[in-house]
Image (cartoon, rainbow, N blue to C red; front, side, top):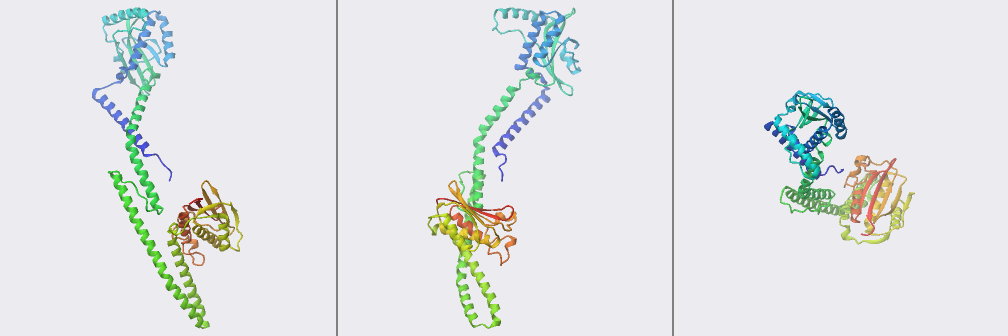
Length: 481
């Protein structure tokens, strides 16, 4: 099964979604509870930036003729990527980009400062200019001018404004500077997204580091349990999982260990009973064969046919018992036999001379010397080759080195097997539908014995379909056992 999204990534993603939803919920609650508007966005660096632009425009326009104001504001349009315009205290457009102020914005366009306050700030601005000419680094201590921001219309437009210490015309109407953009960021003038993105990334990174030990401990335990379950599923019941955890995963580890122990005991008892029964059947079958031979010597011609059928049944039973015994003994091969050093090509020739002396087999075998259980590999190769001779033709044997291992492939161009039966071919007593007849199929233990013999050599065996037809049995064993 392919690996999906790791648990840690899922936990971190859900954490980010949770934080985002909580943030939106808090903002929505504050807006409903305290009737918050977008003006709060201008309390930080964005508001200071707008104030600086307001002072800069005020200072520049103060020294220009009113006819030159439109061209001066147009330069700001190009510089910041937003529309700049000046409105009077009645909400009417005066200079700059032609904009129609929405009705929702009209109350904010009115400069509620008194004429005395505006005049005082104008004088303060003039004195500040003089001081800045003397000391560029000295900060201005002028009182802040009112600022506002609002979203209107659909599609949305965002308006930011600041009341200026500037008048227009003979009536000396106070002016308000409006900046309009289709984006809430205003090209970075209204809102600078980088601090927010940096804050979000920092929160995610800090959360990731805080959650890493906890989630890592979970995934490590789950990985160990998964690996143990996979190992147990392949029949290695001695596998155990650490039980150090004191939570639900620790209880699960204890249950897995108990299950592995019980399954191991059950399978060992089953194999021992099977071996004992097979061993006990050998003696009565031998006595029956001996008695049948005596009866055949004293039988009449009419009885010969029936006696031959009976003899065939006894031979089939004896062969079945012999394979059951071989299957039971294959598990203890590493304990009963010692590894030997021999040439692989020589062993393959011995197996061919025994199992297929009259059949032409194509060989592609490297001259390799290996150190493993000779009799186990001999038995495995013999069973596979015997099946290939029984069911197929055009047999080919390949063998060579693959890193620290040796691969052996036995290929044929027979009818093959259905693809869905491939994972079960090496199970005891399993035979595909096409091989269930007694005349063509054996007991279903041949490939199971092959698997146990190859595992006794420290290797693995697998089956796959051969193109266009046929079957490939591939064994992979270490050069040194």
